[in-house]
Length: 238
Ligand SMILES: [Fe+2]
Ligand SMILES: [Fe+2]
Image 1 (cartoon, rainbow, N blue to C red):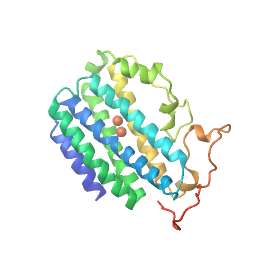
Image 2: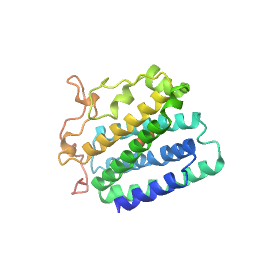
Image 3: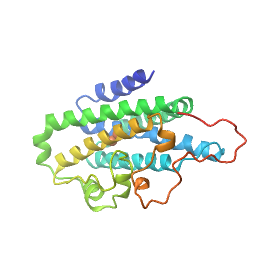
Image 4: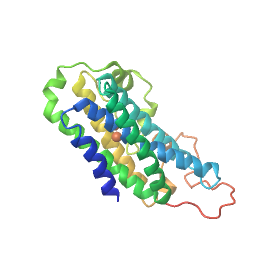
């Protein structure tokens, strides 16, 4: 089922948009970040019902959406969303995917993370292929302001927070042209893959932490899953 979902997504985005690079990336970035909203919604539901609380999961998934939002803003600045048909297709697909992943995440969080691992891996290879095929041209083009603001000039707390395999400030892309922007985006996708793998580990419920929460000086929730007083006797498990 996971493979079917990923292949369907890949088919529509890669085959239908074969010769339209920036609209394809725009659709990819619109749809591919939606599952993180699904994760946040379900985690919020668990917390509201008093079933389960784990602030770091919310924090990391929001940081992931924040990163993907900036990929989307970059694609929009490159004209990827210029045609109304692409916007309609992207938003309709995103709406469907949101609910598909909500149901999947409710039924099996590990499967939902496995799904996103494959989606992010596909995104990594898509951008890697683009860098190989169009690299020389990209090096002659300037970086959009939104990319410079995000990677170089902005507050990078959130940028660090989705990369759970790294310490804060462990990665700082240098942006001089459009090629560097796509290198940074590709590497971001690789970091999302690692985070999705970490979410599937058997001890994730006990040990999963955001990069800043792992600092010795961090003042966060204890490592053990916080169980709230609840009328529900069973905790959701991965
Ligand atoms: Fe992305
Ligand atoms: Fe991604």
